[in-house]
Structure formats: structure tokens, C-alpha cells
Image (cartoon, rainbow, N blue to C red; front, side):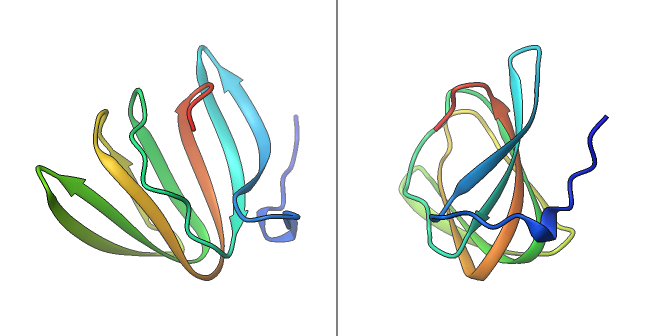
Length: 103
């Protein structure tokens, strides 16, 4: 058993991660960031849980961009093949559940 105090985790760079668990090909990672990621597409689904801060999730489907503001406690599901990028508003802690080895 492990207790992780997400608010105490600070990375040395944007999107630094603390591995929480790897379960049957699925990884659970705690991220700290204060900078956007990059547009990308995952091989598989992905779930974001904003633990602290705010994150604007941007998705592109069929050339149309949508933006969703996530606050602490909000969850966001990205379907396989959906282009997306996370833009924190200030510093944020985000729990990400995805296939192991995803970018």
C-alpha cells in the first residue's frame, strides 16, 4: 500500500510524472505541470482527473477544435484516435490513466 499526497508532488519540468500503478497494460500516473503539452493522438483511450488547479482540454475532431475547462474534481475522457492537448491555467496536478507507453 502506498499513500500519495498529490498536492506535495512537484516536478522539475512540465508534465513530470510520478508512476502510481501499472495494471494489465494500463498506467496510472500523477502529473504536475504549469505548461501545455503538445497536440497528440494516443493509441487507446485516456482519462484525465484534475486534482488541483484548472486545465483547458482542447480536442480536434474532423478539423473542428473544441475547448473544455476542467476544474479540480473534474474528469475528462478522450476516445482513441482523438487529437488533443492539455493547457493548464497556472500549475495543476492531473491524474492520467492510459495504456502503458502512451505519450
